[in-house]
Length: 244
Image (cartoon, rainbow, N blue to C red; front, side, top):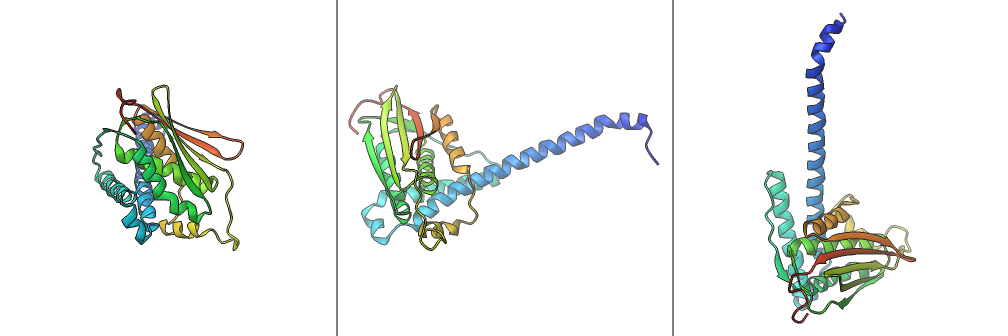
């Protein structure tokens, strides 16, 4: 038996409310899945870096190893808090960014070598200091470097300089991706298969969020060959003093 028009009209507000609730819940579930996927992504990055550490490098370059372990611990804590609905507490500190950049370059040099390339650091920001969440910025740098290795070219430059009271960090790739002779993927691609399905887009979203959280900026710029990814962070009020 069909409901009368009056009954349909009377039930409309309740039906609309239920439909809206379903949509809102779906959006919340979607956002939660995206957040958890990003947390997993940020846990995979340092674990991938750790798989590439050679035994001799652990002794000669402990800072690169320590950075990966620290980021893995922070990413695991973030994932745990996301699962339990808790807020991640972050802390900023004034520091020289050069050690962070140098550590990131060392951390991913092996990954670049497996892809047939290398990473170089060009530091032109003497005395620059920024007030940042150390692990958040380290994660952003890792994402930029891995993105350049996977989607850019084998020759990658990390250029740092000061512009208009900001630290400008540019990751520039050469725009040519070598292919393995077997056609089955490079050794680097085989190693990264251990992380499961590739999820694209999480890394750059993490970089954008990190830039915004620090009142900075992030943008991509295509070049005649390759791509330039730029992360800008405000300098401390004493950002041009001292060495570095």
